[in-house]
Length: 566
Image (cartoon, rainbow, N blue to C red; front, top):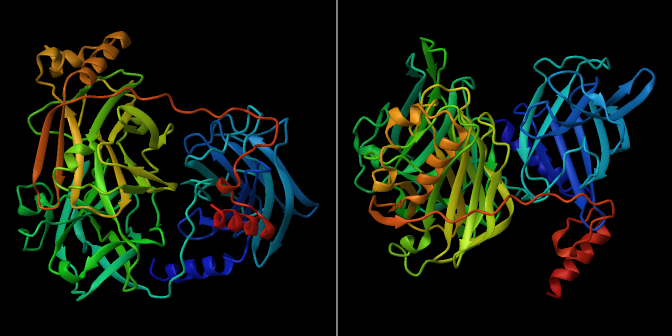
């Protein structure tokens, strides 16, 4: 990983002068598949350049859930007979079908130095039922390629990555590659389906304050590392240890999230005006690395040395970054049971920022720029609603096709401002039709969680703002008992139970970085608006110039002039 980072930045530096396609992402961990793009909302078009390390066929597409079914795909290459390129759609895990309406325009296709480079364009919105709409929300990109021009099964030469194409944050170029390692060292992973390992540590002393600007996963075994969290510890944690988590140790109190990584995630770079503070007056601070290992086959003799690498700089940025945990989290004395055989079951976690203002007053405007959504195997959708004066004004984030295998921090692209008194609600939708027993809220992979980690600035001394329905409330009667929930089979009965959980008082909890807690026992869940849908438009999209990335130099000049006169 260390050797790839400088190359990554050199690529950004080299590509920075390409005004037509200012954005770039590697779609794979080995940097063999590169996607560049740019768009013009005024014209309603988006242009892509796909660069793949092969001289065979290449494929790229948009997927509802990261798989083949329902995907909108292009495939092409440069063969003995010349260029070939077409628009396809997939009905399952089989050869895609040629789309009757060819919605993509090939601009160029060539081979150079063992790479195939294809440039193509399409409309942002499409009226073809076989095409996937491109919206301002993150979208799952898929790719595949072959060693020859015979389009056949790709085997392991495939992958998926979630990217926000229309709200993408550009990268910075730095030459300082100093980093801190938060990793475990050859620990033994027991033959258990779920295992949490914690390492409490102190970083090497940095006498002055620095900013972490990039977090890179260091994964030794991708098949068992599920997610990793790095927490900052309160001042009373003063001793290191390296052992299983949640055994009653003092490090269990470390719960201020500093950095996070989930399965399917990649390198995450912060905005150029913000960084995670480290060092200086906090040089004596301890940190807790928590790694969740998922070992479904309960293999023995597995060892691991995974963790996070934190790249930092002495060049301080304008803002300190904080991470706030929101959603629904298990409270020890309360049960939360998701019934089996539910086609869709909704849970809610709420946060009223008025609670936070009792720790931090006045509460500054919190500028949210990225979000990491998290559930386990039964999760299908996650939505984060944003309310002001009792009315929903926006979604901070949403994923209508949540995939347990693709959990990565998503840049929102545009900043979302949380003001004092605003409310946040995290809604998770689960499917348990393949389960015969209740699903509990808990740590195991077969348990469930419903969390949204909000990355924001300026950082405040708050670690979490979460809630749990009061399942001991008289309204619940006997419905909260595991035996009763287990016997639920009718969808109407399940929906009634879901409504009860939503209607009872929600116990809200806020905590700060010193492990102080504040509870509010009469919270409630507000109604959440329907997810906005894309309207099919045959005409070219119209929009303010300020919301577009113009794909020509003249357009960029006009954009700067427009900003100057605002």
